[in-house]
Amino acid sequence: MLRNKKLLFIAIIACLVSSVRAQETNSPYSRYGYGILKDQAVGPSKAMGGIGYGLRHGQSANPMNPASYSRVDSLTFLFDIGISATYGKLSDGVNSKSDYNGGLDYITILIPLAKGLGVSAGVLPYSSVGYKFGSTETTNDLSYIKSFSGSGGLSQIYLGAGYKLARTGLSLGANASYLFGTIEHTRSIPSIGATGSNTSAEYSRLRMNTFKFDLGLQYELTLSKKDKLTIGAIYSPKINSKGDYENIHYELATSGSAVSADTTAYNGVDAGIPATYGAGFSLNRDNKLVVGADVTYQKWNDVKYSKYMGDGLNQSDRFNDRWKYALGLEYMIDPYDRSFFKRVKFRGGVNYSNSYMNVQNSDNKIKGYDEYGATFGFGLPVRDNLGGRFSYININFEYKKVKPAVTNMIKEEYFGISLNMNINEFWFFRKKID
Image (tube, rainbow, N blue to C red; front, side, top):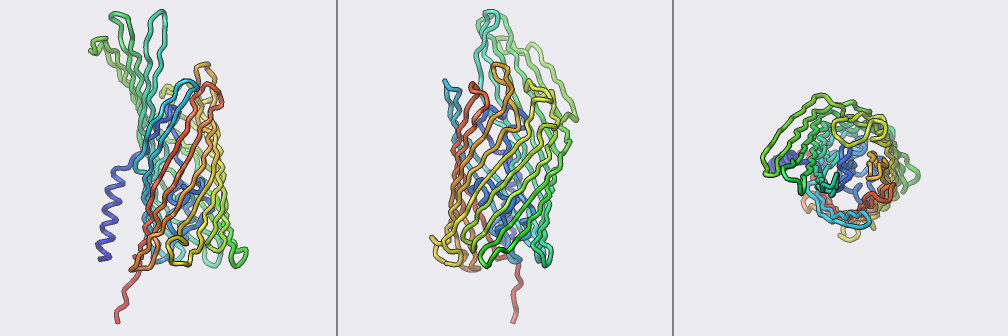
């Protein structure tokens, strides 16, 4: 029976990994750079403002800091899968637009290999591209409509390990990730009212794959019988990765027939990933209350990116160094009681970050935006009567506001809900034979 359950989990993971892609968005800002960045928060972290560097919970993997894997129980198999849906509202002060997006968010597993040694693997989103917008313009008494659309993004498959040094509070960990994906942009400029005029259409694609590494540490300090402080830090080195670029330019007659088509392709174009530094803490009081905070710094300013992507920006003004701050908490009435309500986990948090990319507006001003977020959620316990262990169904709610630095740029608001299942299985044991 146990063998069949393991095989079922492996089959489910294999099927899901083969179908995972970066989660879609509907933001016009995803036209720039790699699109909208997706942080590596999963499970409980998503409802706690996205914190994770100092979290050491045994209920799910925490890929934000691989040192946390050492916290896994020696008899536990943890499987975590998340899905999400988002309602977004865009406004330029005059017009507004709303849209829905969603899909599979992430997959993680966490298993013990030895005492104090945990191993995790999974699939996470890195960035997302998804937009569609247009404008009507006039040149020399000729009116035409410019339309722009894009899709794709980057995902990462990771494998990591965390180890706790014996007789110390120090844990060390590392993730190795395969980062891959395709970013596609389409632009068309059809003419209106000019007999015999052509329509210009352009399709651009950036495809990349590279390896990314994360190093982490956590230090646990016992303050009292009830209080434990965990301090964590991570570092991801800069990667001067490359990608493959392709552009197809069409000229179409008003009848729709192709007048000409030109293809341009370059291999090994710049597609760099920045160095990332992160630090945070969590304070655990009697396993009932957990509070924590994180700060993240990504050095985007010196990242090289392909000039062929046609964003209208140059190397010096394309990217900004990014800072993110997050604060979160979790509360449970009684972790040792078997009643459903007393084991429900209540979570909440807030966060702030600036954009890593700049945008050029109609007045040729080049600026970025600020992003504000608030989260709230519940962890609903599901008890395994056979093993006596608790799995959790986590329901998370999120509000996010994008505030541009220039007033005539687009403002965005997002309302999201995510659902994830932490399956806590009692797997790694040997049957005793009398």
